[in-house]
Image (tube, rainbow, N blue to C red; front, top):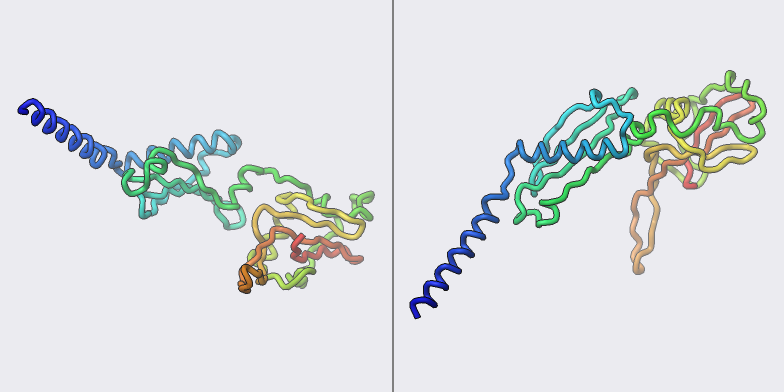
Length: 233
């Protein structure tokens, strides 16, 4: 009987020790969490951003979260935006779950595509419709129509980036050609450039939400003005 009692007590103590270990030992200090975040960031950069000059990285900016800390590194871009990398690190497995505690991943904003494709995916000459493709000398005559409207051909979009930025991105080649015809080209930028309200029927209930677009229709007038109109497709 005594042996049984001893075994029960020993087993109970072992359970308490194991519980205390999982309760106390895994708690990470801010320094440890930053070190883990840097390790994850370096892995992400080595995989997809090998040409990035690491000296351009600034940060980290540390944000408190419900489960731990979020570390933000960023690269300022020429036109005033920032390309940001976000890495969440959990402080304790009991508040985040074991999976989130053990594994981390990098979240990025749209602007990181400008780092990934630093030379762009297109060329300014690509915006020419087919009817102009044989005369590259026309490019010297092009100018942007500063009075153009941001209304899409398919509906009313609200422009969320400055027009000057769109002109700059076109000149730098930060786009890809989505479609080309004899009269115009449709380009897709690296980030959303506008939104509009649309109605969606879900189980008989009308819900209004914002639909974003990265695409714009590029037309060149007879006066060699480049016009930009936001489109769905």
